[in-house]
Image 1: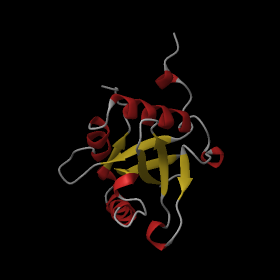
Image 2: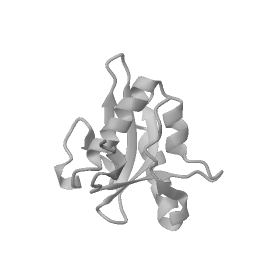
Image 3: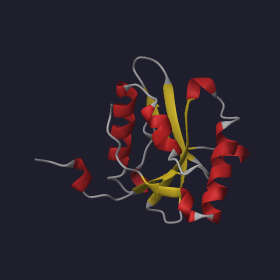
Length: 141
């Protein structure tokens, strides 16, 4: 039997942990429908098996502009409507992608809230590495 979590992992995913000690990515993930959860989990699973320089648009995009400097996004466009994003960055190693800010793009289409929040969370993590932990490949509910 094939176990996707024992397969080769090229990129490690980490999640932002809030001041309350809660995984903010997991909290958001669990609030989504099973279809959205499954699509996001599948995108992350596919990305973690390829070197970052092979990541291409649809499941991933680098963001541009001063407020999004150094930030990328995992992208999921659900067939039943809704564009979902998880903003993050590579670091401290190029083989580690830290997810810091999940949201539904329909609510923040040009990212005036998302990018500044993502950069703030990145700074928090850079000052205290305990503000992240490994993505757990969460179970779809």
